[in-house]
Amino acid sequence: MGMRRFDGPSDLHLHSLHSDGTESPAQVMQAAHRYGLRTAALTDHDTTSGWAEAAEAATSLGMTFLPGMEMSAKHEWRSVHVLAYLIDPDDAALRAMTERVRASRLDRARTMAGRIGRDYDLDWDDILAQTSDGATVGRPHIADALVAKGHVRDRTEAFASILSPRGDYYVALFAPDPVTAVSLIAGAGGVPIVAHPAGRAGVLPEPLMTRMLDAGLAGFELGHRENLGPGIRALQRIVDEHDLLVTGSSDYHGLGKPNLPGENTTADDMVERIIERATGSAPVYP
Ligand code: AMP
Ligand code: FE
Ligand code: FE
Ligand code: ZN
Image 1 (tube, protein in one colour):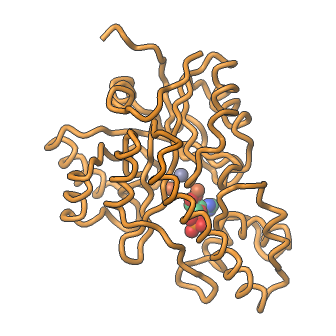
Image 2 (cartoon, protein in one colour):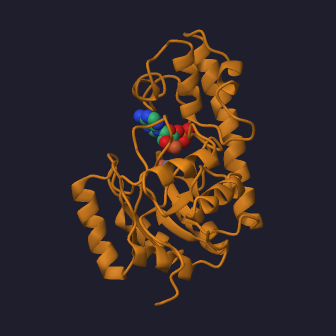
């Protein structure tokens, strides 16, 4: 109370070209500012390399910057994303894991490119041409290469066809199980929140969620365009029961997705609770 130094509206989930967004961290913060946000996080997949540029850009625009990351995890066959706010970016255990995931993503993209290249005019250089130096590679970069080669119209069409997990070209990536991801984030002083937890795959099984909560899970990103009503209601009951955190965010990817900054926002008291709970790093104030 009385200690608040940030202002809303707050959008806590945005991507830059340090992963699969299409804009630099500074451009992402400029977009957030244009859409009326006062606090914004950068949450690139499995990397914190965009933080310094984003912090500088955000604060020069009078915004508060909240450092974040979206960590890849996997439960059986399905991909689970855990948002990691205010982690210590130098935590050795967390870094070792994200480096391993990023290396696996690179191998996997190469393998997928090889498989696709048997049927389509596409090679590894085409994907590299769509990937900025040091970025966390993902299917979106392969999608951009397929667009550049004229095989599909946009990322959406690529994901629905050539890049589909049900197709012949798909290769899984290595990622930790969600309990390990949550423990690593909590161990790095961060605040773990499950991203888009009520999407088409449905909510995670309750026993797994209990183990994630025991490992330090803080809450759920209930405000996200991919969440569906029944899942949101099921998770809201768990939130109420355990007094968990709830966030809302855009998951902006620049031109890579239709999602726009501020289309979902996080309540001020929730941002405050994230900041109070974290010990790994701090927001950067204007
Ligand atoms: P990957 O982690 O490499 O398997 O790719 C998943 C990433 O692709 C997610 O982070 C999403 O941001 C992005 N993605 C998933 N589906 C789509 C889509 N239909 N259009 C654009 N991007 C997508
Ligand atoms: Fe993404
Ligand atoms: Fe995600
Ligand atoms: Zn995301």
